[in-house]
Image (cartoon, rainbow, N blue to C red; front, side, top):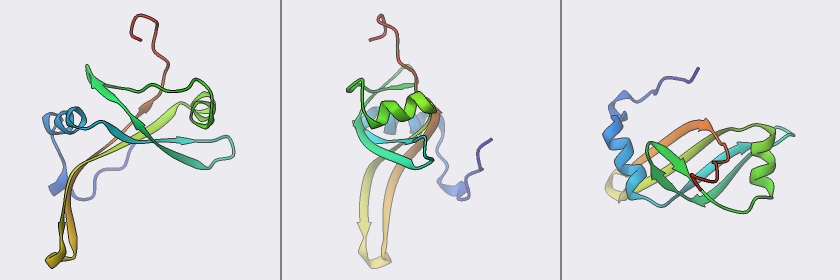
Length: 108
């Protein structure tokens, strides 16, 4: 279903993934529009009970795309450190895949 991660040395376990999601407050939600173009939008979120929750307007590009195709990706970048002498950057990140659904009144 999904490609295997190429750099296995950078693979995180579930505890590390959950920590990054818990310690941060925003990420990029990726959706696909009816015309096939990807759309990435920064959002604030909460990670709770192994789920990512977001809120926002009930109309707009993001929700139009989710209504068309609720498969999404969500990317969070945590701590970063420039390594100029190595012409590189050290960072932590999580890329999650799933389906966006509206939660019930009780969950809201």
